[in-house]
Image (spheres, rainbow, N blue to C red):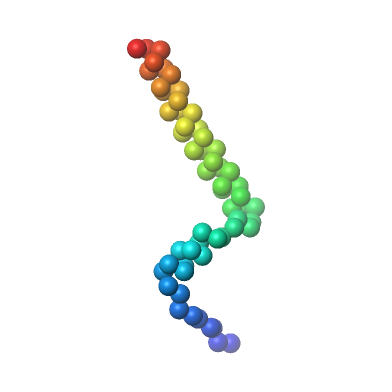
Length: 56
């Protein structure tokens, strides 16, 4: 069996990465965890600003 390869430019490769969809459950779970983490980071920043304002 022979592998067939073709040349791809970097721009085509990067644009192809933008069109990748999450297919498996694990990828969707990872995406949810990242969203939760980013939301928690934003909440922590907001809470820090509130505490700073209360102490001022």
